[in-house]
Image 1 (cartoon, rainbow, N blue to C red):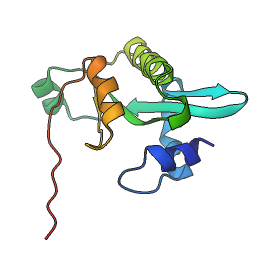
Image 2: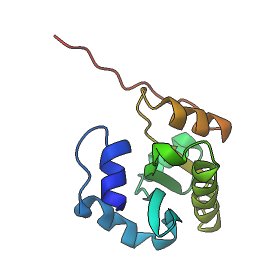
Image 3: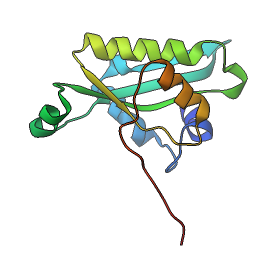
Length: 132
């Protein structure tokens, strides 16, 4: 069910496969699911990125967490599920020693951007494209 939710609402560069979720095994506390009536209605997962020391120094960080995917079924949005999932994931990162969290968010994902804004995430780069 997580794969269906991911592919319907969180995949913006390619189809999400079981292989994409394998990385969650390396930080099991970074994988959270929201259920209602035994149905998965949302999920969030992240892991720690291996960042070179010189980059960490430039960023002023020592351990970087990366939010890999997060989605809430549209029928369950605006009910606090995304907020709860993101809060829990950030707390797990904090408890594991992260001092910087990164996330890539598609420009068209306005609700997700609003959530990240609410949590104090800052824009660090622009990923741009141009059709020829």
